[in-house]
Image 1 (tube, rainbow, N blue to C red):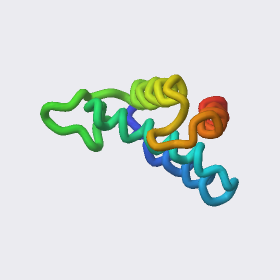
Image 2: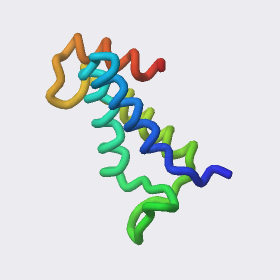
Image 3: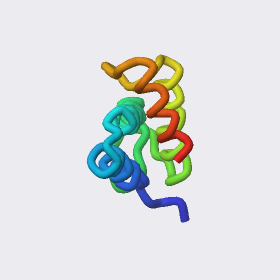
Image 4: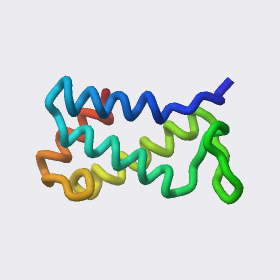
Length: 95
């Protein structure tokens, strides 16, 4: 149906990387990608408001993926540790 909001799942993955797997750089990259997708105005039906862009599950996931790729292209999460962050964030993109 494409109406579920995938952000909670993605943020849960970030928590898993941060606390269970000891990979805070990966968590930072995922968190930043979600924040950037929201800042760009993308919203699923459950959080949509006037003036934002209504998208489905797949499109929201794609928006986060694009933001994660942009973070990787810059060398990691904002305020990240460069090469180390980039490698860790690449793991998140492939997970």
